[in-house]
Length: 384
Image 1: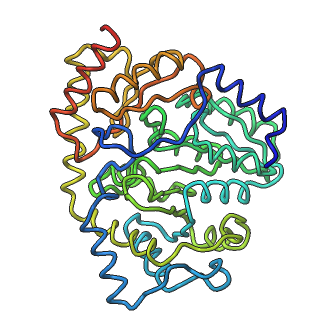
Image 2: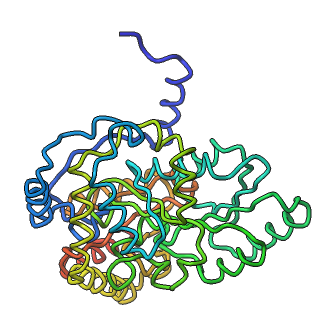
């Protein structure tokens, strides 16, 4: 078989030289401080069995969807689950995509038009950046969670742009690489002042924030002033897929113009049934309560261990400790793994050079003893 072209080999060599080469890992029995399975839903035998029984009871015995949703793949579970999502998230419409990546590239490549402007937080998801790069609109980043910087950009744009040019503002309710949150209420005021459309990616907030895991937007009661929300099911929901929430006309537009929706085979019935069961499971808030107890305990242990200076402030399930240098952060992560804890390093270029970090993901099923122990080890490894 023919080898790689020289240019591609050179790119791999640069990654190796920077100690930033990515590799596929294997599952292990380490204590989980790395996965996005915040509520333990992906391992829930109750959700698994309930999903199976739901499919059998409704005589849904298909392995695949048979085609795109616009052809043969729009089976009856789509209507049931999209209606459930609308009611849970207090939204006029919901359109399910095969993944959060598909949802983001489908939205941002089709909604903003030529002559429009997109302002996005510099730490936004890679899938949103990819969608913006596929758009005919111009995209500009603003400094992370810096609303003064965003407002200056909006002022400048509105002073020189024709009124027919739309401005889109894009942020996340919980940032995946920092675990922090923007001032969403203030963002809604900026979007109102400059007649901008605000889009919020709630991937790491659904199942974590809100009384039943509705997300930060609903927890702040601002869903009516958000143009679109992206909710995903591969994190706290423990399954797969995503949905874009918004108006009925937004849904109609996406069905007609979002290429990642139109030109792909739909999700199989089993995936839809699992989403349906996972949303029902959120009615029992016990796992969310356990998760927040662990979050509070983790934060208290950071303070007790005098580690505040190296952690990014977070109230979510994601907590990041900045350890500069790919080699350094990988070495400490390996020490954690040798001690039985799965803590992952986040390397540059995923994060800016010099901002490499250890990413601690907390879960409802972590014991408080393990939470304390992992931070005790951290203090030892970095010689605080």
